[in-house]
Amino acid sequence: MTDGPSNGMWPSPFNQRFSSALGASGRQIRFADCTLRDGEQQAGVVFDKDAKVQIARALDAIGLYEIEAGTVASSEADREAIADMVGMKLNAKISVLCRGLVADMDLAAALGVWGVRLSFPISVLERKHKLKGISDDDYIGRALELTAYARQRGLYVVFSPYDTTRAEHPFLLRLVGELQRAGTVDRLRIVDTTGCATPAAIGFLTTEIRMAAPGMDLEIHCHNDFGLACANTLAGIEAGADYVSATINGLGERCGNAAIEEIVMALEVLYGVRTGLDLRQLTAISRLVSGLSGINVQVNKAVVGENAFRHEAGMVVAGLLEDPFTAEAYQPEIVGQRRGILLGKKSGLVSVAYKVKELGLDLGEGRFPDLLNAVKREAVVKRRSLTDQEFAALAKDVAREVPAARA
Image (cartoon, rainbow, N blue to C red; front, side, top):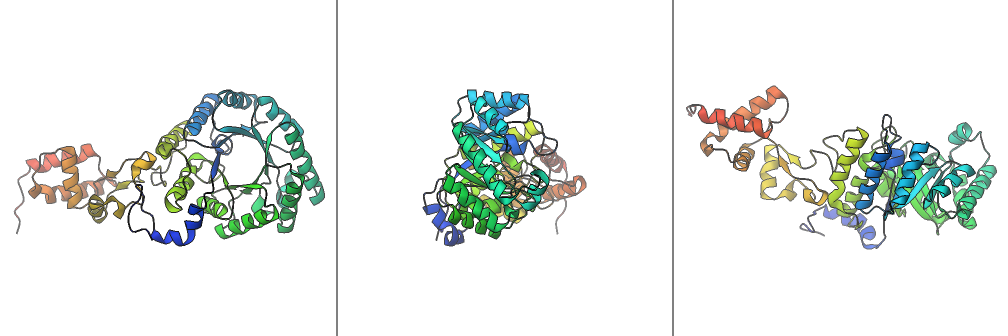
């Protein structure tokens, strides 16, 4: 069991009882980012061509394997953006989402993309309302025809039977078996469309599909309607999915998707899996996507939130200043963050001493208790922690005051 930090990381040693097999397996987990497609489907988000190109360059710079660049039938402007991405000759492979139409495959081929993602609803509910109640036999026949056609056009084929987690179990296994026998699909995407599955269910489903189609690559795509997208994605990986479909900041429809930065750091820190990505750019790309989408990242967001490495409580700060691993599982610099000590209602004398030294303030140690009391009073009035400027002003006020008599 690990009894100390390694490479700036110190996770729970109990993880090794459950995750060591994945970390030692040598499996390569590849990320297929869908910020430009599913991320833009978040209500109120619009990426113009320039924004899409900026995000694509940033995604490529951190080393992502694939970029799902958009929906090919969306608009001419979107197709122009996709064509620009293809023309940029990025290291990342460029794929697009297609409906179950030959015309979409033709558009994709004309754009010169590497691959297509054939989005074809599989649950009885979705098929009733979106495919006019197509029968099981007709569904499989159509899936085989479309995937074969895409292959004939020279495209890498990802079959995405969305609402996978609400599909009928026997029919789902029959479908993947038929697809493997036909050899028309390169990868199958398991989609938790409404975020309604548990990690145990995702693990079971992924294992079942892996057994039904042992030669087919699997991808996991989870929505966050119950806050389980990251956990569900990791469950899919543990069960055999080697591709992750997710977005920066978890941007996406309704409650969003699994967040790439969370999955990456969980794999790196908790499972000991090296992703090969440039982790130092995770915070920068998060802020880029936030700015271009207009969707603010919550301050306590894992990995990239402003408060991810900020500390206020006095006891926590006292331990942190002795050893940061008392309050953090990995160093903030790994993801391009910085540690911060805030002064507020919960602060202690250690925090005051640290901030006085950090800001180079002229105040004797004997006045620290008075300054701490002033900080706590002001924080209650303002209902927040204080800025460095506000703290410095309080320190000056305390320095000018006549010290109170102490019993």
